[in-house]
Length: 85
Image (tube, rainbow, N blue to C red; front, side, top):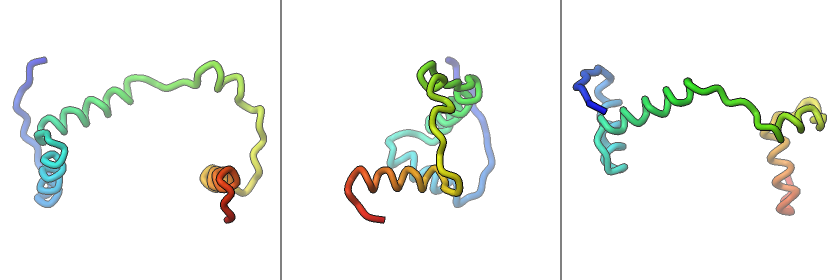
């Protein structure tokens, strides 16, 4: 794909941090920005629908009221690994 030059404006500190990040990743800021846009656009192009197994399982389990997904996961993992909360 042919590349063209693009000029963007951003906060000076943000640009400095982005350049450091690109350097640590061994890439250029331009390449990092292009990959970011590619991934962002790829996510918006396709709508993820549950697979057949997930669709079959939908509604099979009633979760306790008053607990967040995170709390339920923490409790399950603590129980699995023998940890007390």
